[in-house]
Image (cartoon, rainbow, N blue to C red; front, side, top):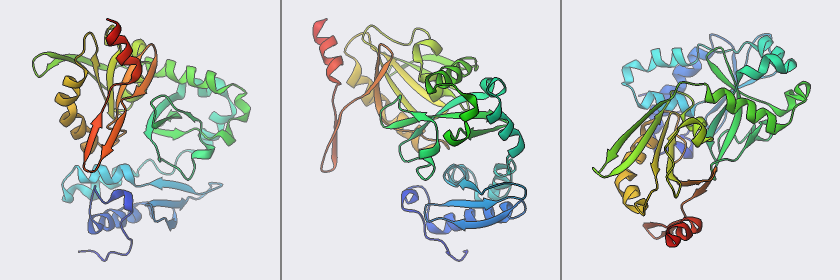
Length: 301
């Protein structure tokens, strides 16, 4: 048992215990210290590092690494952590050049869908928008096997609008090879799974563009439990609650077990827009209801 020097961040209490957290943290610090100086470790698990020849410090977010470790055997943690931090430090000279030349940057732009609260300490300087209510879609640079979140303070030389940036990024996402598979849930309910290591949730931003024939006459029920996993149920009749009941455990498992989780929320997709299914909590019970627009469509039929 390692000495528990750092308290377990509150948002991680359902993921691991304090001893596991401190062991992973210590192993991470050991690897990072081979590359740069650890300046601080915040209460929320963010490590601030200063690398040689870099103007400012780098923030290293522990959440994804902690999830990776929890999904593997404890004996494998040292090797996993070493591999996770091997990309540090980033090629700051190349990133600087990318920010200077939009023509060079454009093919590298992508997006990532993240839960509310992600990177809240730097969010004010990120380029983002909301596509799935309750989450944020961040603009990223896909470069050297890493995703770098685009900083608004750095993009003055690009001289293009946010709309154009996201259109360009989503065009690039659309070129990714996605794994779209249809199958039956509970023997009668059609569901499509959309998989990609990095960009499944990103591809779902423009669902009808990237996944043909997954939207029914009344839209679709969509879940994005993780960045690499999307589930879609086309609505051709009033099978919505039957599908949600049948799929709930599956969605929860992907949300809790995947490394890069996003949300357990169910969304209604219709005519290019996402809307949350209203959720009401009373004591220990939760009640999901139909979005008003979906009710009107089904009643009109």
